[in-house]
Length: 118
Image (cartoon, rainbow, N blue to C red; front, side, top):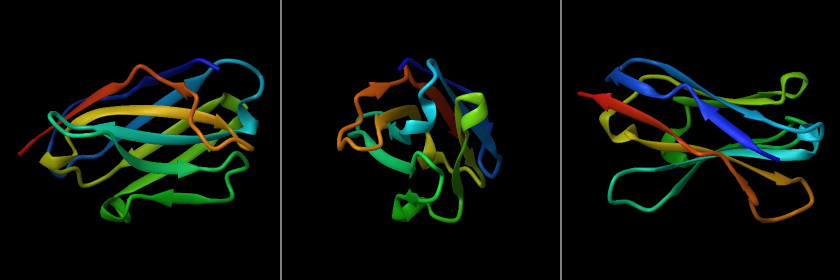
């Protein structure tokens, strides 16, 4: 599976942004999808996960209510809707995929930079 993330950019605090992650191949619907982010000087952190059938979503506690993960299996695409962005959301955002029966995220996109100015 190859992943291509897009949608990042420079926005102001309070703005919204939607990231997209397009996956290659015909087995997208068997993969759990996730978003991670890495801010400058910090470790990578989990943002959100959505299971392969879309039945379960999970979020970092600090992001609940502002970020929403979704997917369209017909388009091989996962999304991350980010609302009320804050300066501390500035980071490179990565999408990742794993086969639903596996534990580790084996496939990663190249990352898309989100910069939030205050």
